[in-house]
Image: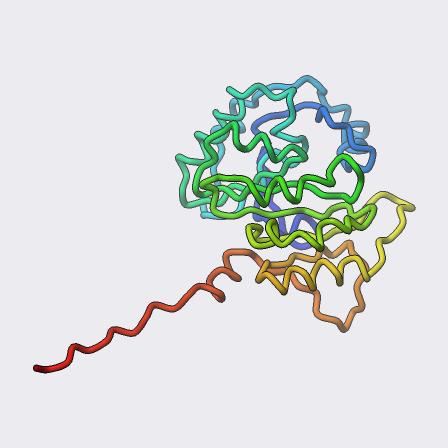
Length: 242
């Protein structure tokens, strides 16, 4: 069933929800699901979990959809994706967070207004165009975001991409959590945060990214930033008496 999140888990959502189950088609070498699949001998067959599909939290929250696979992969039938989107749209009190390595596929679906659509950029060749793709995406989703996790190499082209930065609302920065993996340099996070600040983009720096204890670790949500930067309503101008 859905899994409650919090400290020590995925800090930027309240729940993970997996109405579609099975082995992810991308099979990225750094994915944490490899060890979980092996440890628990999970069924690799792709399928819709009908019981999970009907789940909804009692209190409104942020729900990360299909955290165990990529819902926009070609292996997932469009009709399955649309069933998940219909559930999300029918519960407008919740925020549904989607993350994919194929952001162009969002255009093939009617993403609900209470969704946040994101893409992954790890710095490797396969994901290098994703930042621009999500930035130029036309969607009615409330938020567009980029997850720089795990940051394996620094994507130089991202820093010098004002068109995408203007359109993106949120970035997540994280490290490779595999045992023995190299820690990404602090400079990489600093450069991404600097660009985000320039364009009023919210930043969530994950706990797995090494950071000086006494330094501020930004863990912001995009809707909070939007409230801060929202234009103020103009004061009414009194009419002159004739």
